[in-house]
Length: 379
Image 1 (cartoon, rainbow, N blue to C red):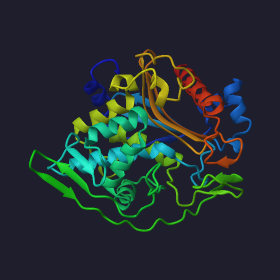
Image 2: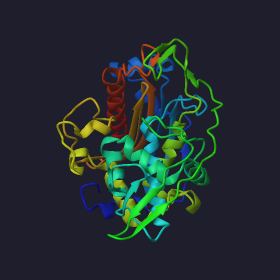
Image 3: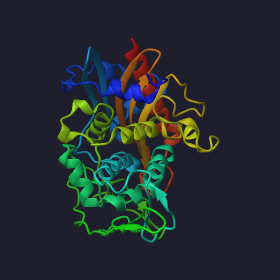
């Protein structure tokens, strides 16, 4: 499958899927892994509350022309807030391609720039950067094109809930309700402009634990000794993110209304971007090694990922929160599954410091979690 032409893979995963997910009654698969005595896993599981750990797993059963999910959960609670970081780039990329498909004037290779920006680019280039190196400016350009209100309505219309996308990333005007105009450069003499639009004010989230930690560094680089407030931040819980991954990998498991409506070419493009390692997309391997954006199974090594493993995913990390949502396929054993995991590695309890335990605690856990899930599901 993943080693032959991509188009065949898309045909195989787009087969008719009439059955919804079965809910596991005993969590055997996920429980077996969470009971592992491996120190990288045991450390987190033994203090799961402290690390705010949540994991969701879907196994995939193929029988003739049907596919059935069996869903497993470990401490998944949509009302317990965590910061989704760059995982919000997954639905925004899909929505941008979907919106482009609805406008006959443009496609993913149309040249455009954001009003006030210095870069003329294409949606294909920006989406490639999103999946290869998780580029924040690329996400912000798509955010301007879509607008906050459009994003949230489109996702909720697909039945993806709960969620709330409220802001850009790593920019001083992150919450500005007015999007910037988009100028398309169709040819040497023709420019088309999509006007700016104003979205509704961001409402505060009414969830558990939106106030986090014991302090934070403010915009003046001063320490404020009070909990950090996430109430106006992006909100994309485990169940919603997991559902988005199901929709793009197995669209026929969902009604037409619930799907992302992409052209076959755009869907092939985005799946290729999701599964490719940075070096395959033109980025320098020394800086952007294979596991730069793939934490499950390989996150704790800089070695090349073998061709027999394909990982279609999106990671996110910020404020000490660490998330990976992935569809994983092992050609050698024909094992496939979807897993989404999130944890917090901020031992100081101070946010905005950049002093987090990603490399020493969080990513090693996700890597071992992925390995043990794969080995368990092989047998």
